[in-house]
Structures are given as structure tokens and as C-alpha cells.
Amino acid sequence: MDFPCFHCNTETKLDVKIDVSFFACPSCGTLYSKNENNDFTYRDRFKKEIYNNAFSVGQKAEFKNETYAIIGLLIKRFDAVTRWAEYVLQNDKGEFLYLSESSGNFILLEQIEFEKKVGNHPLEIDYLDKTFERYDYTYPKLDYASGYFDYNILNKIELIEYINPPYIVSFEKFGQEQTAFYGKHISRGAIKSAFKTSAIPSKSEIGMVQPFLFDVRKLVIIFCSFAILILLTHWFLNKDRREQEVLNTSIPFESYTTKEFVSPSFELKGSSAPLQISVYSNVNNSWANVQVALVNEKTNEEVYASKDIEYYHGNTDGESWSEGSTSENFNICGVAEGKYHLSITPSKAPEDLSNSSLVISATWNKPSWRNIFMTFIFMTVFIVVIYYLSRYFEEKRWGNY
Image (tube, rainbow, N blue to C red; front, top):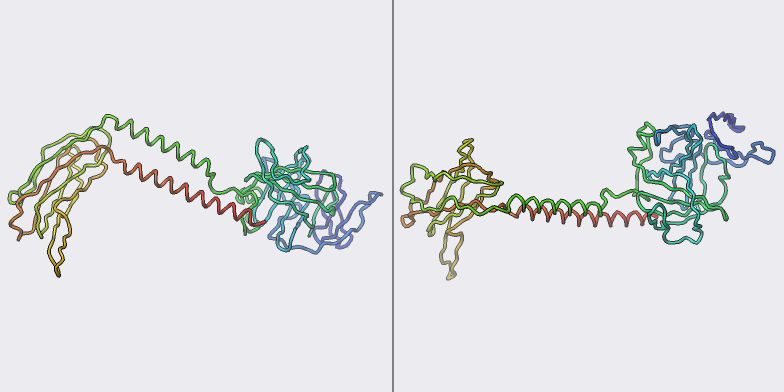
């Protein structure tokens, strides 16, 4: 349809498949309506609006593998600061889509049949096996229009909105007439892709049906499934495991001042587990040290660990004190099955003549539950944090209107 504006002499050309009854010039904002003789006459003039990088009439986008053109744009408000844009889109088949944008958040809608009347504003409605909560009902005012319309855009309507993020059911009521729309939040990336542009309205608030980053219920189910899988795997891999002591001996310091103590070879079978090493030495206001190398006899790979044993005590200003211990424990973690031996280098304070030996034992344990518990703790903390973030997100959503 070609429409020459009588005010600014701008001709708007757009292929529309509707019976146009209202036209608003995209250039100057002059509004025309069709009279009883099917002639378009002057009706009003809108002040030209610069709205948040809005799309323009005639601009095309691809949705659902179809190309749609914007045939109409409405900018509405219901208070001094809350404003939004509504776009009417139509494809070559004459099918409609409706795109709503508010504070940089987008909802793509389609008109639906909804028999139940909502003029009494029920708190909840059901649609497509989903329950929607009443979000708001308002009486918006029209600030600006542009393009072609097949209905009276000046009618004072009541807008009633029900949400179940990311879905929405929206109603426009004019008298006894009710028009229903069903829509879903659409991401900013999808809008950029559809319109093939990066120039889209900037985002400033949480959207009416913007989904939270995580679905908390699904996240709990996934984490619980992982927890059960971890427990079953741990049980299956270790149900036949027994602790295996691979070394328990006393090493005299004087015999190994210039050489290492080499343990007999031992073979480990099963999944990886920590090698727990316990050491004792009769230190008294002194120290001792042990250096341990776990040697894989097949690959010659070595894993080193070192531990100090210190014990000091005394009396200061009439008060006894002590620090340290004569024994220590440490782990070499994740020791896989294979054939190994230990190379041990003991040492002590040269002035300590009363301490003659170091007792050392090594046990290949059942796999530690520590990592499993830490994983469970992390998942629990993560879920709790996400839950409270989602609560905050919802409070911000409902607080915006």
C-alpha cells in the first residue's frame, strides 16, 4: 500500500495484507483514519518520539524461518516513566507476530483464542497446562504511532498480563471485547540475529518474563542425579577394597646419614587412593625430618613428600608451655595401582644425641571420602546461593511494576 502524507508529502510504501483503517505517517507522526466514505482524513498528530533505539516501520526480521516486516509501531505508557514499544509484524502469507520491547527486554507474541473472560482480574489462569500468575493490569496511554493498522489505535484499552517466566498470556480489553496473546521471552542475541543488526534498545531492567540464568528445580534434580551417580560409582569401584599396609619399620638415624632407606617392593591393585604415611620420632626440644619418594618401578616416576617433626616445651614465668608433636601424618594423594617402593631419607638435629630412630608406616587406604564430601558441599552451597539469587531476581522482577 502506498500512502502519501498530506502534511509532509512523504509517501510510505509497504506491502500490507490488512484492511487499513488507521495510518500514522512514520515521517511526521500525522494520524489518519478512514471515514464512512472510505476516505482517509486527518485525525491527530503525534509528537515525534525518539524511543530507545526503536525499530522502524518497514524493517524486516526473520522469525520461525519466515520473513516478517514491521507494518505498525505503537509506543505506550502507563505512568511517567514506564514506556514500551509494540511492533506489529506480518509475513507474505498475511500471518501476524507481535513483538513487545520494554527496557531492552523482548517478548514475541501470537494472538490466541481464550474463552474465559478475565475482566475481574483473577489471580491465576491456566493455559497449555501451565499456571500463570497475574502480574499487573493497567490502562495504558498511546504516546506515538507509526505505520498501518486495521483497528482503532485510539481506543482506550485495559491491559491485563499473566506470567509464568519465560511465558506470558496478555489480554487487551475494550468494553466487552477481549483479545488474548500468548508469548515468550526472546533473547537479545536472537533479536540481533532476526533483524541482522547490533543496534537494538539498551537494557536497563529485569524483564517481565525474562528467565533466571538457572532453572533452580532442574538444577536440583541434575545435582541430585550426579550425587547418586558419584555414590554408586564410588561404591562399585571400591566395594572389595581393603586397607593395605605397605611399610612399618624403625629406621636408625646413624645408619642412614649418607644413604637412603629403600623399602621392599609392594604392589597395589584397584582404583587410585591416597597413601597415608605416619612418622614418629622421640624429639625433645628438637626436630627431625623425613623425606619420602614414592617410586613407580614400571615408569620410574617419583613423587616426593617431606615432613618436619618438631616438639618443644618449657617453662616461662612459671607457666608451662609446649608446641609441636612427636608424630605427624601426611598423604601422597591419588596413588594408582602398580608396583612401587619407597625411598626414605631421615635426618635430625645434629646436637640431639638422645634421639636414635624414626618410626615410619605407610598404608594404602580406602579411597578418601573427602573429595566426595567436598563435592557434595560445593553442590549444596551452589544450589543455596542460586536459590537466593533467584529469589532476589524475582523480587526485582515483581518490584519493577
